Image (cartoon, rainbow, N blue to C red; front, side, top):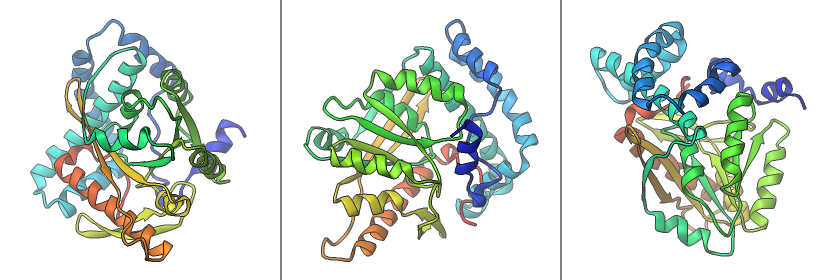
Length: 305
């Protein structure tokens, strides 16, 4: 399947306004990697602080979706919302730059909360699922949490720019990580099932409906929102534990990783009830993170539609 077909296969009609890819032409993205070898990251942040203003003005739909988060779900006033929308776009730009800084060999200081949850499962014989979200910089987890005894299979958006995918693959190669493109033919689920059977780790996003429309409605920031059932259904069906993971930027070259257990509720309940309980547990964990780091929410579409 060609790159264009893969991208088309991944498009979700509900999110056609924003596909979640890294903006920029391939030569620009390649140049960023080279640039980081000569230019201090603070200088590029300064440039980004101006560039994002024009990006915001040119992408009204994205801007309005984020504004809705601050106005309707966090209760911000008009001027505070305006400042927060700018801060959100600037923070997203910083996160993108940080990814390319890693591709160029830069290092970030990372602190991990509840790393023992991860180490306990990583050293046990069975497989498990790590559920992520589009907040902060989840990709950085792949360079920090390095499983020694298991292989990490990370489900990723198939329509991302080739330059980004190539750099990810290069960085992940030394960390025992395999990227698994999420496609409409659901082939990624066969790979995920096999990985869990072999006692490996599967990383899946828990806040997008890519690949499947099966969902559960959860209360999220005071309003109903649809969350994918896939990660939680897979865990319950395979009877494997789940962890949530959020990688949040806290300084110029500093991140904090939050790891938590996802409870599936009463073992005697039906599988469907346990799936929904796990999804709602994850939604509650994500809400706490968004309230703590509101400008690091990077879903640029109407999440509550």
